[in-house]
Length: 334
Image (cartoon, rainbow, N blue to C red; front, top):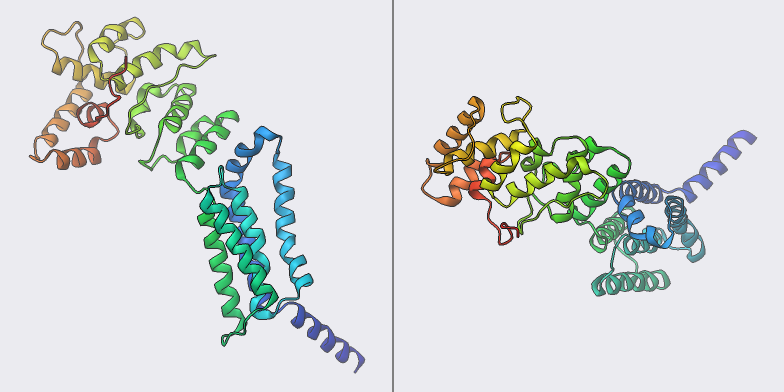
Protein backbone atom coordinates (compact mmCIF):
# COMPACT_ATOMS: atom_id res chain seq x y z
CA UNK A 1 0.00 0.00 0.00
CA UNK A 2 2.82 2.39 0.93
CA UNK A 3 4.72 1.63 -2.28
CA UNK A 4 1.62 2.13 -4.37
CA UNK A 5 0.94 5.53 -2.76
CA UNK A 6 4.55 6.65 -3.23
CA UNK A 7 4.50 5.61 -6.86
CA UNK A 8 1.29 7.54 -7.45
CA UNK A 9 2.75 10.68 -5.87
CA UNK A 10 5.93 10.40 -7.96
CA UNK A 11 3.95 9.92 -11.15
CA UNK A 12 1.83 12.94 -10.23
CA UNK A 13 4.90 15.12 -9.73
CA UNK A 14 6.48 13.93 -12.98
CA UNK A 15 3.29 14.49 -14.94
CA UNK A 16 2.98 17.99 -13.45
CA UNK A 17 6.59 18.99 -14.12
CA UNK A 18 6.99 17.21 -17.46
CA UNK A 19 3.76 17.55 -19.38
CA UNK A 20 3.66 16.51 -23.01
CA UNK A 21 3.84 20.08 -24.30
CA UNK A 22 6.93 20.81 -22.17
CA UNK A 23 8.70 17.68 -23.38
CA UNK A 24 7.82 18.57 -26.96
CA UNK A 25 9.10 22.14 -26.55
CA UNK A 26 12.39 21.01 -25.07
CA UNK A 27 12.87 18.30 -27.69
CA UNK A 28 12.29 20.72 -30.58
CA UNK A 29 14.43 23.41 -28.96
CA UNK A 30 17.39 21.08 -28.37
CA UNK A 31 17.20 19.63 -31.88
CA UNK A 32 17.16 23.15 -33.31
CA UNK A 33 20.10 24.26 -31.14
CA UNK A 34 22.22 21.29 -32.25
CA UNK A 35 21.38 21.84 -35.92
CA UNK A 36 21.92 25.58 -35.63
CA UNK A 37 25.33 25.12 -34.00
CA UNK A 38 26.34 22.63 -36.69
CA UNK A 39 25.40 25.10 -39.43
CA UNK A 40 26.51 28.40 -37.88
CA UNK A 41 29.49 27.68 -35.61
CA UNK A 42 32.21 28.32 -38.21
CA UNK A 43 30.55 31.58 -39.20
CA UNK A 44 30.18 32.70 -35.57
CA UNK A 45 33.79 31.81 -34.75
CA UNK A 46 35.11 33.65 -37.80
CA UNK A 47 32.96 36.70 -37.07
CA UNK A 48 34.08 37.13 -33.46
CA UNK A 49 37.60 35.68 -33.52
CA UNK A 50 39.00 39.19 -34.01
CA UNK A 51 37.87 40.22 -30.51
CA UNK A 52 39.23 37.14 -28.77
CA UNK A 53 36.11 34.95 -28.84
CA UNK A 54 37.09 31.27 -28.89
CA UNK A 55 35.19 28.06 -29.58
CA UNK A 56 34.95 27.45 -25.81
CA UNK A 57 33.36 30.89 -25.33
CA UNK A 58 30.73 30.14 -27.96
CA UNK A 59 29.98 26.74 -26.40
CA UNK A 60 29.56 28.37 -22.98
CA UNK A 61 27.15 30.90 -24.52
CA UNK A 62 25.12 28.10 -26.06
CA UNK A 63 24.96 26.30 -22.71
CA UNK A 64 23.69 29.50 -21.04
CA UNK A 65 21.11 30.04 -23.79
CA UNK A 66 20.01 26.42 -23.44
CA UNK A 67 19.49 26.74 -19.68
CA UNK A 68 17.86 30.18 -19.89
CA UNK A 69 14.35 28.85 -20.80
CA UNK A 70 14.36 26.62 -17.72
CA UNK A 71 15.17 29.59 -15.48
CA UNK A 72 12.61 31.88 -17.12
CA UNK A 73 9.80 29.34 -16.97
CA UNK A 74 10.30 28.91 -13.22
CA UNK A 75 10.68 32.59 -12.41
CA UNK A 76 7.76 33.84 -14.48
CA UNK A 77 5.59 30.76 -13.83
CA UNK A 78 4.03 30.67 -17.27
CA UNK A 79 0.80 28.87 -17.96
CA UNK A 80 1.03 25.62 -19.86
CA UNK A 81 -0.48 27.24 -22.95
CA UNK A 82 2.39 29.72 -23.23
CA UNK A 83 5.28 27.64 -21.93
CA UNK A 84 7.13 27.83 -25.28
CA UNK A 85 7.56 31.60 -24.84
CA UNK A 86 10.37 30.83 -22.41
CA UNK A 87 12.50 29.73 -25.37
CA UNK A 88 12.04 32.96 -27.35
CA UNK A 89 14.73 35.12 -25.66
CA UNK A 90 17.36 32.41 -26.22
CA UNK A 91 16.45 32.09 -29.88
CA UNK A 92 16.43 35.85 -30.45
CA UNK A 93 19.84 36.29 -28.80
CA UNK A 94 21.16 33.38 -30.84
CA UNK A 95 19.89 34.97 -34.06
CA UNK A 96 21.52 38.33 -33.31
CA UNK A 97 24.82 36.65 -32.37
CA UNK A 98 24.79 34.76 -35.68
CA UNK A 99 24.39 37.93 -37.72
CA UNK A 100 27.69 39.34 -38.96
CA UNK A 101 26.39 42.90 -39.12
CA UNK A 102 22.89 43.14 -37.63
CA UNK A 103 20.92 45.65 -39.68
CA UNK A 104 18.08 47.85 -38.49
CA UNK A 105 15.49 45.27 -39.52
CA UNK A 106 17.16 42.53 -37.45
CA UNK A 107 17.53 44.73 -34.37
CA UNK A 108 13.98 46.10 -34.56
CA UNK A 109 12.60 42.64 -35.27
CA UNK A 110 14.41 41.20 -32.27
CA UNK A 111 13.20 44.05 -30.04
CA UNK A 112 9.59 43.50 -31.14
CA UNK A 113 9.81 39.78 -30.43
CA UNK A 114 11.22 40.44 -26.96
CA UNK A 115 8.43 42.97 -26.29
CA UNK A 116 5.82 40.43 -27.38
CA UNK A 117 7.41 37.90 -25.06
CA UNK A 118 7.23 40.32 -22.10
CA UNK A 119 3.60 41.29 -22.76
CA UNK A 120 2.44 37.71 -23.18
CA UNK A 121 4.35 36.66 -20.07
CA UNK A 122 2.68 39.35 -17.94
CA UNK A 123 -0.89 38.97 -19.20
CA UNK A 124 -1.22 35.88 -21.36
CA UNK A 125 -4.62 35.59 -23.07
CA UNK A 126 -6.57 32.36 -22.79
CA UNK A 127 -6.86 30.28 -25.93
CA UNK A 128 -9.49 27.79 -26.97
CA UNK A 129 -6.94 25.29 -28.21
CA UNK A 130 -4.96 22.53 -26.48
CA UNK A 131 -1.65 23.64 -24.91
CA UNK A 132 0.29 21.32 -27.18
CA UNK A 133 -1.00 23.18 -30.27
CA UNK A 134 -0.27 26.69 -28.96
CA UNK A 135 3.23 25.70 -27.81
CA UNK A 136 4.00 23.97 -31.09
CA UNK A 137 2.96 27.09 -33.02
CA UNK A 138 5.12 29.33 -30.82
CA UNK A 139 8.20 27.12 -31.22
CA UNK A 140 7.78 26.94 -35.00
CA UNK A 141 7.29 30.71 -35.33
CA UNK A 142 10.27 31.40 -33.03
CA UNK A 143 12.62 29.10 -34.97
CA UNK A 144 11.53 30.59 -38.30
CA UNK A 145 12.11 34.10 -36.89
CA UNK A 146 15.57 33.00 -35.72
CA UNK A 147 16.48 31.81 -39.20
CA UNK A 148 15.15 35.01 -40.77
CA UNK A 149 17.12 37.22 -38.37
CA UNK A 150 20.32 35.17 -38.76
CA UNK A 151 22.88 35.31 -41.53
CA UNK A 152 22.05 32.26 -43.64
CA UNK A 153 23.75 33.45 -46.83
CA UNK A 154 25.04 30.40 -48.69
CA UNK A 155 28.19 32.05 -50.01
CA UNK A 156 29.16 33.44 -46.61
CA UNK A 157 28.90 30.02 -45.00
CA UNK A 158 30.71 28.32 -47.87
CA UNK A 159 33.52 30.85 -47.55
CA UNK A 160 34.02 30.19 -43.84
CA UNK A 161 33.79 26.42 -44.30
CA UNK A 162 36.44 26.46 -47.02
CA UNK A 163 38.68 28.80 -45.00
CA UNK A 164 38.45 26.46 -42.01
CA UNK A 165 39.29 23.41 -44.13
CA UNK A 166 42.22 25.15 -45.79
CA UNK A 167 43.58 26.08 -42.36
CA UNK A 168 43.35 22.39 -41.40
CA UNK A 169 44.92 21.24 -44.71
CA UNK A 170 41.71 19.49 -45.77
CA UNK A 171 42.08 20.52 -49.38
CA UNK A 172 40.02 17.76 -51.01
CA UNK A 173 37.17 18.35 -48.55
CA UNK A 174 37.32 22.08 -49.24
CA UNK A 175 36.60 21.43 -52.92
CA UNK A 176 33.42 19.57 -52.00
CA UNK A 177 31.87 22.58 -50.23
CA UNK A 178 29.15 24.03 -52.45
CA UNK A 179 30.44 21.96 -55.36
CA UNK A 180 26.95 21.52 -56.85
CA UNK A 181 25.94 25.15 -56.47
CA UNK A 182 26.24 27.68 -59.30
CA UNK A 183 26.29 30.49 -56.73
CA UNK A 184 29.78 31.91 -56.19
CA UNK A 185 31.80 35.11 -55.75
CA UNK A 186 35.44 36.17 -56.02
CA UNK A 187 36.26 35.17 -52.42
CA UNK A 188 34.88 31.62 -52.74
CA UNK A 189 36.43 31.28 -56.20
CA UNK A 190 39.90 32.21 -54.92
CA UNK A 191 39.61 29.92 -51.90
CA UNK A 192 38.73 27.03 -54.20
CA UNK A 193 41.67 27.97 -56.40
CA UNK A 194 43.96 27.74 -53.35
CA UNK A 195 42.64 24.24 -52.62
CA UNK A 196 43.24 23.23 -56.25
CA UNK A 197 46.76 24.64 -56.11
CA UNK A 198 47.55 22.57 -53.02
CA UNK A 199 46.19 19.41 -54.68
CA UNK A 200 47.87 20.23 -58.03
CA UNK A 201 44.52 20.17 -59.84
CA UNK A 202 44.03 23.78 -60.90
CA UNK A 203 44.78 23.06 -64.55
CA UNK A 204 42.31 20.17 -64.53
CA UNK A 205 39.44 21.51 -62.42
CA UNK A 206 39.38 25.32 -62.52
CA UNK A 207 36.45 25.47 -64.95
CA UNK A 208 34.60 22.59 -63.32
CA UNK A 209 33.48 25.09 -60.68
CA UNK A 210 31.40 28.22 -61.38
CA UNK A 211 33.17 31.47 -62.23
CA UNK A 212 31.85 34.72 -60.64
CA UNK A 213 29.49 36.54 -62.98
CA UNK A 214 31.49 39.77 -62.65
CA UNK A 215 34.69 38.03 -63.69
CA UNK A 216 37.74 37.50 -61.53
CA UNK A 217 41.37 36.50 -61.48
CA UNK A 218 43.30 34.19 -59.20
CA UNK A 219 45.37 35.92 -56.56
CA UNK A 220 49.05 35.02 -56.35
CA UNK A 221 50.01 33.31 -53.05
CA UNK A 222 52.73 34.77 -50.85
CA UNK A 223 54.47 31.52 -50.00
CA UNK A 224 54.00 29.11 -52.91
CA UNK A 225 56.35 29.99 -55.76
CA UNK A 226 55.82 26.60 -57.42
CA UNK A 227 52.22 27.54 -58.22
CA UNK A 228 53.00 30.91 -59.80
CA UNK A 229 53.25 29.62 -63.36
CA UNK A 230 49.93 27.75 -63.11
CA UNK A 231 48.21 30.85 -61.73
CA UNK A 232 49.69 32.94 -64.54
CA UNK A 233 48.46 30.46 -67.15
CA UNK A 234 45.01 30.16 -65.58
CA UNK A 235 44.62 33.94 -65.40
CA UNK A 236 45.37 34.07 -69.12
CA UNK A 237 42.63 31.50 -69.69
CA UNK A 238 40.19 33.44 -67.52
CA UNK A 239 40.85 36.54 -69.62
CA UNK A 240 40.62 34.46 -72.84
CA UNK A 241 44.08 35.50 -73.99
CA UNK A 242 44.79 32.33 -75.96
CA UNK A 243 47.75 33.67 -77.95
CA UNK A 244 49.67 34.69 -74.82
CA UNK A 245 48.71 31.40 -73.20
CA UNK A 246 49.98 29.36 -76.16
CA UNK A 247 53.25 31.31 -76.20
CA UNK A 248 53.92 30.85 -72.48
CA UNK A 249 52.69 27.29 -71.94
CA UNK A 250 55.76 25.59 -73.55
CA UNK A 251 58.00 27.38 -71.03
CA UNK A 252 56.47 25.33 -68.21
CA UNK A 253 55.03 22.15 -69.76
CA UNK A 254 55.89 19.55 -72.35
CA UNK A 255 52.98 19.85 -74.78
CA UNK A 256 53.22 16.20 -75.78
CA UNK A 257 53.17 14.87 -72.21
CA UNK A 258 50.05 12.82 -71.32
CA UNK A 259 50.00 14.60 -67.95
CA UNK A 260 49.35 18.01 -69.53
CA UNK A 261 46.39 19.43 -67.54
CA UNK A 262 42.97 19.01 -69.11
CA UNK A 263 42.03 22.69 -69.41
CA UNK A 264 45.40 23.45 -70.99
CA UNK A 265 44.69 20.84 -73.66
CA UNK A 266 41.27 22.36 -74.28
CA UNK A 267 42.76 25.84 -74.55
CA UNK A 268 45.35 24.66 -77.08
CA UNK A 269 42.67 23.05 -79.24
CA UNK A 270 40.67 26.28 -79.10
CA UNK A 271 43.76 28.32 -79.95
CA UNK A 272 44.53 26.21 -83.03
CA UNK A 273 40.92 26.35 -84.21
CA UNK A 274 40.64 30.13 -83.86
CA UNK A 275 44.09 31.24 -85.05
CA UNK A 276 45.04 31.57 -88.72
CA UNK A 277 48.79 31.20 -88.21
CA UNK A 278 49.35 29.41 -84.88
CA UNK A 279 52.78 29.66 -83.31
CA UNK A 280 52.74 26.05 -82.10
CA UNK A 281 51.59 22.64 -83.24
CA UNK A 282 49.49 20.44 -81.03
CA UNK A 283 47.04 17.56 -81.33
CA UNK A 284 45.17 15.41 -78.84
CA UNK A 285 42.67 12.91 -80.23
CA UNK A 286 40.29 12.90 -77.26
CA UNK A 287 40.27 16.68 -76.77
CA UNK A 288 39.86 17.26 -80.51
CA UNK A 289 36.86 14.91 -80.54
CA UNK A 290 35.30 16.62 -77.51
CA UNK A 291 35.63 20.03 -79.13
CA UNK A 292 34.11 18.73 -82.36
CA UNK A 293 31.15 17.32 -80.41
CA UNK A 294 30.81 20.62 -78.54
CA UNK A 295 30.62 22.60 -81.79
CA UNK A 296 28.10 20.16 -83.26
CA UNK A 297 25.91 20.57 -80.18
CA UNK A 298 26.28 24.35 -80.30
CA UNK A 299 25.16 24.54 -83.93
CA UNK A 300 21.97 22.59 -83.25
CA UNK A 301 20.29 25.66 -81.75
CA UNK A 302 19.54 28.96 -83.44
CA UNK A 303 18.73 30.67 -80.14
CA UNK A 304 21.95 31.71 -78.37
CA UNK A 305 20.50 31.38 -74.86
CA UNK A 306 19.14 27.91 -75.56
CA UNK A 307 22.47 26.86 -77.07
CA UNK A 308 24.35 28.16 -74.01
CA UNK A 309 22.06 26.28 -71.61
CA UNK A 310 22.14 23.01 -73.56
CA UNK A 311 25.89 23.13 -74.01
CA UNK A 312 26.33 23.92 -70.33
CA UNK A 313 24.47 20.75 -69.39
CA UNK A 314 26.92 18.67 -71.44
CA UNK A 315 30.11 20.74 -71.44
CA UNK A 316 29.75 23.15 -68.52
CA UNK A 317 32.90 21.77 -66.89
CA UNK A 318 35.11 22.48 -69.91
CA UNK A 319 37.08 25.50 -71.06
CA UNK A 320 35.17 25.23 -74.35
CA UNK A 321 31.95 26.39 -72.71
CA UNK A 322 33.69 29.13 -70.74
CA UNK A 323 35.43 30.53 -73.81
CA UNK A 324 32.34 30.56 -76.02
CA UNK A 325 29.65 31.56 -73.54
CA UNK A 326 31.04 33.23 -70.44
CA UNK A 327 30.83 37.00 -70.74
CA UNK A 328 31.60 39.67 -68.17
CA UNK A 329 32.68 43.27 -68.18
CA UNK A 330 35.82 42.24 -66.33
CA UNK A 331 36.78 39.32 -68.55
CA UNK A 332 39.72 41.19 -70.09
CA UNK A 333 42.31 41.72 -67.39
CA UNK A 334 44.95 44.35 -67.78
